[in-house]
Image (cartoon, rainbow, N blue to C red; front, side):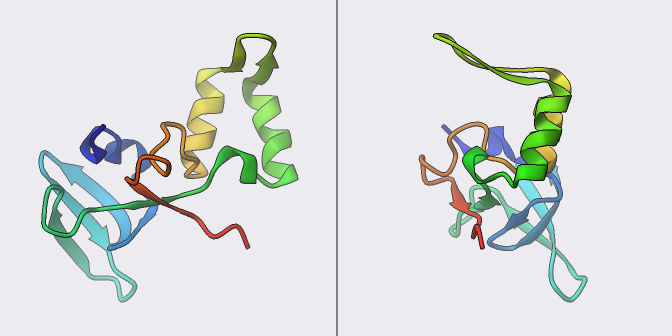
Length: 111
């Protein structure tokens, strides 16, 4: 599992370098707090880490909206998502790929 396979899905998410503004081949672009664009190699010495939330940390309003967009829990096979639900979750910066558990992302503070 490599972070470069997932970065493009999380444009706009916060990272350990600032907000992810773009990805091009082996380079990321970040918007820093003071509005500067920072360029960084994906495989650089300091690894890019997304800051993502777990799906179980959605707010009640986010969960309601997710259900409207096409999320269902089916037994015994697990979850089912429509394309709209997946796009909604990516927009909320939800870790859909287990990046937090694999050390490729930082868990968003749920406070």
